[in-house]
Length: 101
Ligand code: SF4
Ligand code: SF4
Figure 1 (cartoon, rainbow, N blue to C red):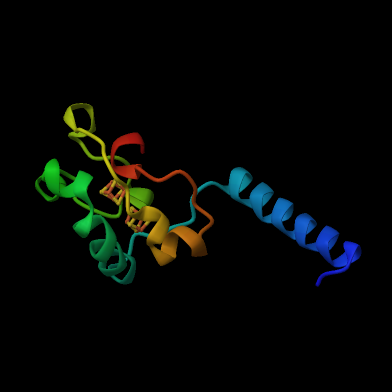
Figure 2 (figure 1 turned 90 degrees about the vertical axis):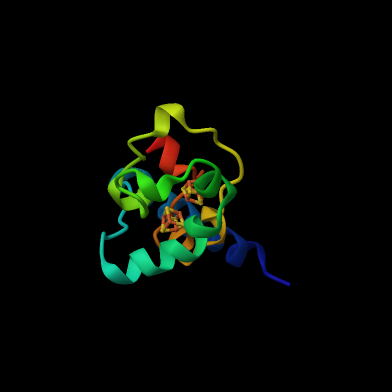
């Protein structure tokens, strides 16, 4: 069981990470490795499949490239981003990057 001091340090670290996230914004790089990671999650996601997002630029990696060019017409349902390792590693939040940018 953690002491009060350790619990306070954990909370401080969490707050620092949050501050870094909101002041720096997304840090996901548009590269081949991240694209392959994205395909495993976006590619399997119902929102992606239903709206055939692979047919519209930027086709994938929406957290780095921005929302889909068909975002206005897309029907948003489940988002698999929270399961993606880039979502955790780069301190992203919310998800639905394909429709909300
Ligand atoms: S966080 Fe979402 S949009 Fe970004 S790489 Fe992962 S699955 Fe794709
Ligand atoms: S950003 Fe989220 S909702 Fe959009 S296709 Fe990727 S996993 Fe699905």
